[in-house]
Image (cartoon, rainbow over all chains, first blue to last red; front, side, top):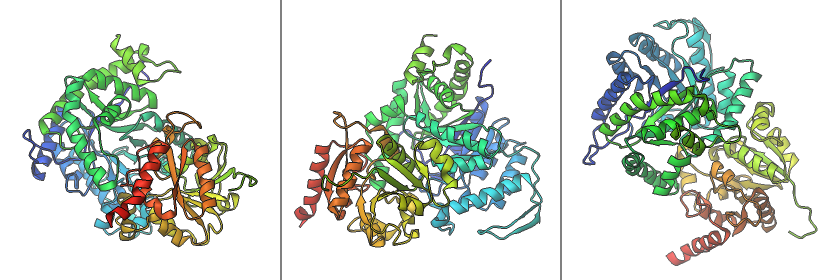
Length: 368
Length: 224
């Protein structure tokens, strides 16, 4: 029997401004409606969840995830609807509760959340928060949100909002609804915090070999033990794109990947992107990009390597046209996910203790 | 540094995040006795240190400063002024911090700092000997690139500071961590090591790095 019985396979979107096939940028409203269509397709092809991020930037239309998710809820049947991530530090947990408990109601129990500190901090000045409170804000708001989800009526006081006394919030949530994961980017303190709350862990792995997250997973498990919490699921979010061939996938994504990193190079002083670096991310890093077989092999490999219960693909990143985002979703749902499940249920795919490399996993799966 | 002085084998690290724990791992591997602190009591980071930097010890920041003569400061840049100005009196303080507006917020002073952000660190900790170093590579590339002395593909890291003896100690540290060490000159020269410069994140050999540094040093003169 598989060690991986019911893995969740999700899609994550930043609702990025994309281009049409002639290379012209679409307007924000069109991009939002396209994203709804992408989620509707994701439901139709059997993907487990669709999750929307939170930014306040010119090139990302994900500033009000709950509204987009509610629209998707009305047009879908099974897919779970979540965030990736909710920047809880600069939100009011009371409002987060009411919005997502309502989303849970309209979607018939399909809402979920990933709460994080946010890797970009544009929401701090926007909502009038002080960056010096970065840690304390997240701690306090996570505390209040988990209380609201589990212990109503809530009596609570904190530093950053008015106290609550015997407070009930509507709509009430059925037991076990609205699961909350904690999203982390690699900060050890955040990993320990997730364990302290006994919440499942979602790792954002956006570059470099995923094996470097193994020590953090060890830290998470040790911390759960220390705080007397039961073992929790661990998930991962990474970027990728699926096409008919490896070459086609790379040719579609490369110019848009380069566009993102060209800007980061100009704004933040990062190294400029090169096709070699891009290919290195595909070959040994954190881009899940290529043909169905290539992507399925790599996802199955990373699930085994890190012991994951959830894999979210941040699909066709950046300005990749809607049509190609749709093509990726179609292939991911209809072909990649079934193939990953097949690879994971085959004991012959188990790596030897001393060779957990992707190259060996590829060699094994192609010899089947 | 004269050869009669003992080589410092103790290292203190203030900051137990991604960078601090990566430097701690490398320093333990390089034969240093390492003490590390986070913001708060030592207990809070004990498990982190045990799992991510085995062999290092978790202490309070005050205890870390007492423990070693050379201290690496690896906290978000916008928080260094929360530390007492005399905290590192007489110590060699390795400034491994970088300004990132997406983490530190947009800060006019950090943004423009004409002599580099390390000059502001030195201005705050007047009684410390500030050396800018260990800031040039992301923590992952830092770990991946470490090589034994003499390896053909060893890359270099630079150190910049106003106290030559302090710089010499940091050059020794860089070598123990697995990199060729390059003396970049005075603290102001550290400007060339910041994000946005030609050295940051690149991973040059010692020769390439020295050439880039002399070109950077000449650039303002050529501009005039």
